[in-house]
Length: 298
Image (cartoon, rainbow, N blue to C red; front, side):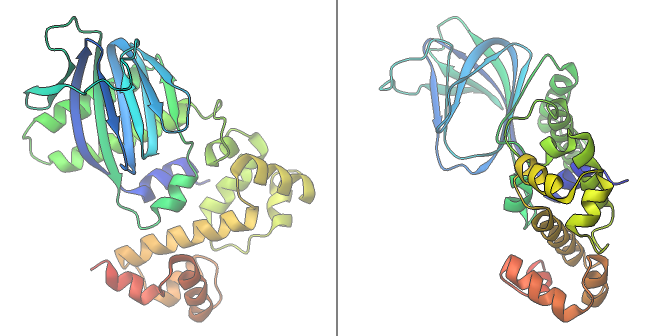
């Protein structure tokens, strides 16, 4: 059977961007706006508060890891936040090492911070399948992966970009599967944590070209049609056939980008009986027909 989590992370095409070591002390405050990019942070020692826009502060302590697949606005401060009018004070004390706050004050936090991007043209769809925020405590493997990304970023080794890309994929998978059983917001991970829904999700991902239906998926999940539909929608946040269509379009988009097959063959691979029917569905989903989509990839 297919592995939906690995499928989504692979199709997201994570691309490393920034990795830095940050220390803070003396009533420091960082505010970022209009980022729209993935952000992660691992606390090496001490602690701090991370407050994404519209959410309660998240207290981060030594050994904690937090991942936000798509963050726009956030504020980060020490555990005792300064006043809202505090002037941000920072300096780069060495390449990739940032000091926040008073450089003479005792250090109250050391953390590894990273930003990346998702190259997929279906990024909004794929990100919507993930939780808004992932907060993990006491996972040594995550801390080790963040450290390896940081070390690789600073090095000038051969195949550096390839290694960083693989490490980032591993980091995302490790973070997401570490919280699969505790995710609060609807999404694919909540579906995978459900023993019955996970069967249906794996069938969809394993063979998007199969003539899936709510009735057939419900039977695979050993549930009545109505119960399956209601639980799928509640746990995953989309109707079953909406999810099937979205996944088919994501797979088709990847094949078009890589030019792995003619459009007629791609249509069959993702469950359409003709190239014309596929073209109509793909254009409705992406805003452009398959040929134009492929040409835009260069």
